[in-house]
Image (tube, rainbow, N blue to C red; front, side, top):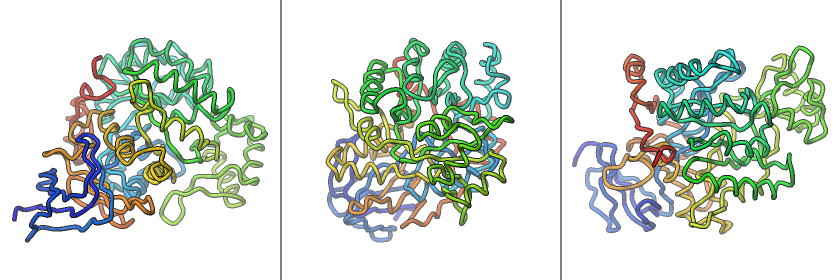
Length: 474
């Protein structure tokens, strides 16, 4: 029997790319899919795993999570283990640096594949909130060289003008970089109003629109109407955008206040005002005591939401510079945006993500499986939203399917509980029954980062973003 011969026996294999949904065995050799057999195969000498009664999908790809962010209070690389426990095999980090990506995967990697987006923070990672074209160009190229696949604009926290936002998109497209946008400019907020700006800002460009559900919380008008408008807008941009939603009720933000005691960022201000709290340090403290606001902190070796007096103590000790969370995401918005299809029968929003990782809301699999049990999605559609389309979004042509020769990235689900119970990357186990056993990992980069990665000591793979859904027919 050949080395590294693994047989996953008797699971229900759900592979949208090959329109395959049957009880079968998966044969893996040298980290690749060797074949799928609906006939029980002899496996003498092979490592065999019995998956009877389980569902097996191509490895879940989280297109929006956080494992390499810039944080003063928690170590975001703890998110690797949290994602592995949740059944993820590949993750797109939405807002860190190449240096943080490399450092974190060395210290706390859990065997996952990871691609990074460089966070554009004025005065820290980009010269100012009014950068010149040359400064934008050099920032994008530097992001690629240091190991990120592109850049992310954080409009809810560090907004640019519409003109600068448009220039960042144009320059990123010109360099073939992946460009993502937490919506909002200096002329709008991180809500439906910011989403309305995108067609003019984007022009004929290409863009990943982050967590669409975050802009449908009922801030501008009724949330159902906001969803309808968002769906119409996204449909009009078909072929130019990637998009995702997450299902957790809890959001992720921060509690930072200025020297006058005013909450700085748009997102937490919106959250406080939505419940009648003043957007000030006193309003934030009241929201914490009320139980509405939670503080994000490390507890028991994992990152958790802390409430009440303990949370207030952390908030005061940190002098407001701490991660926060509010229960503001509406399940109805997540449902509508996840299930809506256009006139061609395609999903309007591409994928289900977590916006998690180092945030304790890594429930993409559980919530999407719940939609299957409810009858809102078929099992094949579930696998499409979690694996197949996400692989196309980033151009990972050898992932997201079980074709012969594909990467043996696999997530195993319990259809009764809806929980992930096992996962593999390149045929190696990463998580078994909730225990994370993967180590290290692989960073996905563009060709611009080869020198950096060669010197890093971390495994890496060069990907071609021209193959991504974002840049197809561009």
